[in-house]
Image (cartoon, rainbow, N blue to C red; front, side, top):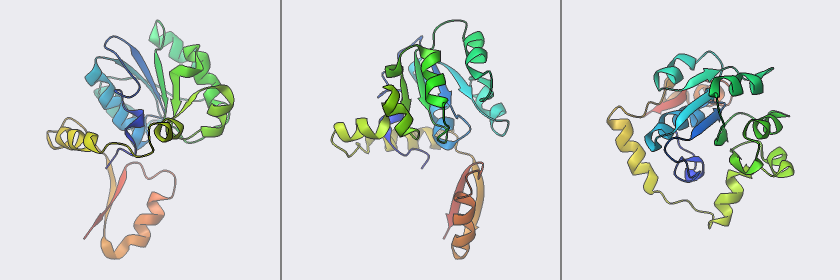
Length: 188
């Protein structure tokens, strides 16, 4: 399933209708799902992503801009107002948390799923810390809701490639490559 932890969900981030959410690294599968889920809470979504899934993200209603040099200025210009929440779903990238804090103006409005050390050192939120504080084991109730959305065609999950079970090594290699461009599926 796309979701690794309910800690990043719009509900847990306390996203409210009318707020603006920036999903940094929206081309990864957690970010890709978040872009689809935040509007269900009435949020306006902005996303940073490379070209692979930019078209999908725009079809989901996100305003998409590339990450990298000049990102802070591009996001601010496109937002035309404050960014209320940031989900950092990107791979760890030195300096990203500082840029995301600069965008929101408050480290407590930035939550990361991957850039833990930098986030902790700058006062941003780390999803695993919050998960452990909440008891360490997330409720699995969210999975049924997301499965219903996927079955109804309201939550898309891009599949990079399907492999027969006997080719599990090739599947693992693609998955661990760092850029499979979707989920890797093993078919029994």
